[in-house]
Length: 395
Image 1: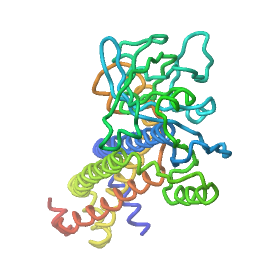
Image 2: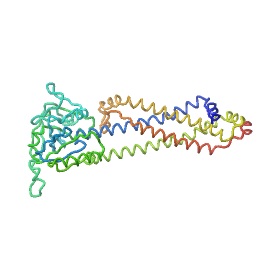
Image 3: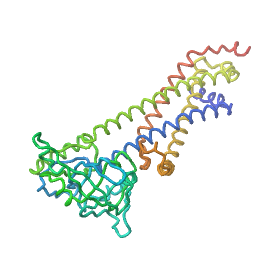
Image 4: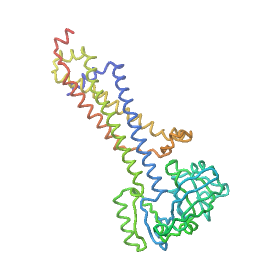
């Protein structure tokens, strides 16, 4: 085998051709790495925002008399309403929260902006609300402005066919603005004071949002059943993936589509890798002639060509991984500048997120590319003509 490695080095002496093939494979692998890191990081970032701001990993329904003792639990009064300004209307979900709701984990998921004399943590009282900057912009509202909200005055009775729905206006005041960076969430969410909204929605039940620290569905299911067993005032629960089923399915489908695209691009790259063996053989016929004349067998000559081509592929994949990781780590500042550009097309995406690199997934992708490329190289060499020494010498 040492002889094959020796001749492999001889076959790689044509530096321009070798470097060209190396760079081409690098340019193919780099965007694949960027794509994997970008999609995984963005989806994980959106998931965390939905969990922290839209209901927690577990949302319990409990009697209004229930007072949670677990610090991971936050009582919430919520309802759907229509808000009005002098220029526009919008459908929103408004959540009544207490002063302990906006903990460090939730605050990390939104940028908070209030008046100069307001505390750094949202403190809502009376009819004050916290709304998203994008929603305020579309409603042409600013901090301190007042606007109307239309709610059901008889939510329990209106569920019965014998009682018509009766709406009544509520006057609210924008006490602060927030931005999670994801418009699909921002444009439909507002926060208010729980003490005030409980009198508005007049419900005998409240929601208890629980941040468990894990997104594992089975683990959260066990926690939920344990909480129900320990608290008789809790009547039911729902997990984050059940409440946001459409979002959850969209994320799963997006990951699958990206995986398919990566596989197609990777397969095309592997097919190209098969041609590298042919190029190495065609560009080094004289060297192969010397190999055969030196007494090497046909199998040893093919092994030398295979190893030379495989080294180019492996080095290209390694360089592509490295380049992709370097670009991925430096991606957030670029994305933040794009997010602040105001281009409407970026509103559908979350561009402000922490980069999360799945080393196992990237290594598996690299191993698959190298593995399939090895098969393509071997098949390509088997289809090549043999290297009879005399014929090579004559050519």
